[in-house]
Image 1 (tube, rainbow, N blue to C red):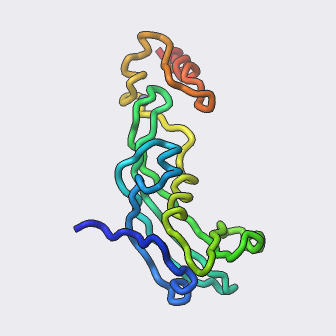
Image 2 (cartoon, protein in one colour; image 1 turned 90 degrees about the vertical axis):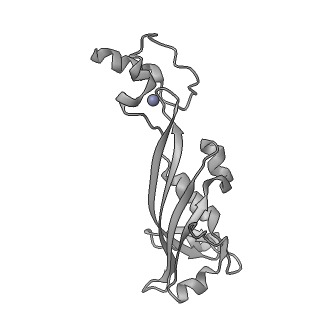
Length: 175
Ligand SMILES: [Zn+2]
């Protein structure tokens, strides 16, 4: 019935030694940093993780994930569905100091006491793949639909978001 959940904690060196693959889902609501970044999310992240050892005896995890999230459109500020997808290659290290020696193609992942919590690893990858800004297609966007009759005042923007007025201006120039 339901999809397999990823195990919370694994022994990644052991999994790499036997070249294991894990596949499963993680609830997005279980990711506190993600929820803090983009608000409460329904749905799951589906992740596939392959554990292995490369020719230089570097233990690694090759993975990919997909997740559907809702992000606010930066034009009308209504939530819109966004599909996230990420491929990643993680090199296991036992200390931060060793991370500096990793070949450049690897992102370091710190493994302490031979144990690794998978949820924060997957959460990190989702956070890295989040787009900075998203917009509805113009046909679907509340602001475009109104064709800016009010002219201005799309409220709720913050300083880090692109200025919605510059978008409005662009739209106006087209008409
Ligand atoms: Zn919109």
